[in-house]
Image (cartoon, rainbow, N blue to C red; front, side, top):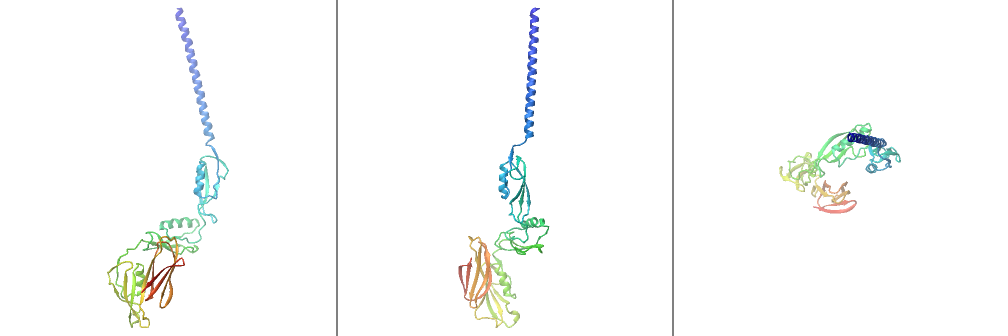
Length: 335
């Protein structure tokens, strides 16, 4: 009996110790849980670290974005037109520089879209989709509608789809402009083509037509008495359907009244000149000299690689002077 009593008292005592330990562990767990929860709550409530907003006004947009990104700040861009600010310049920032904000804060940047456009821009070298977007961008903002008008496609040395001309010309005030006509390159023309029958047509018109294809024209005068035949092609060599290409020569017998026929042969010619590739831009001036004197037949600005074809008339023993940027570049002798 005594042993049973001792065992019973020991078991009760041990149970109380275990229960006490369990209660202590529960209290510790609850305290730790509340401590962690409270710390997390404080962290969330506090938010990301604070930073000072850097100054990005009067900087290029890309530069400003990089600076703000390093501060872990987000950006909202508000593009506007400014008459005195270049395109992509940051004009204003909100909040201002020096303001204390937390990371990932939105910083609003008012960015210049450039000056308000009051003249027709130069669209040469661009594409039709670019011009469409540009017209919508700049003129819809100004409460004016300008659209693309007639589009003419021509063969040229420029890539297909490239704008090579326009009307109105660049710098025209937009006050009374509603449409802009464009001349677009359809790429290089096929060099070889079949001749048509040009007899009965005016030699000046045919000469201009063949000049666009780089074909040289040789004119032989024939005396005629009918004024209607003056300057009209009587015959041609080679004949119709002959395959010709750039720099080939076509000879026309052309009727001229006795009063207009000269002793020397009159030639309808085409001068071809390739602007050196290494020139970014150059002023090309071409002067010819024959028995009736010296005269200028070409004076334009060109870019490197341009091919110039200039139709003109001259007599035997013609000298051609080609000037590049006012310096004599080449002399040619034409019989």
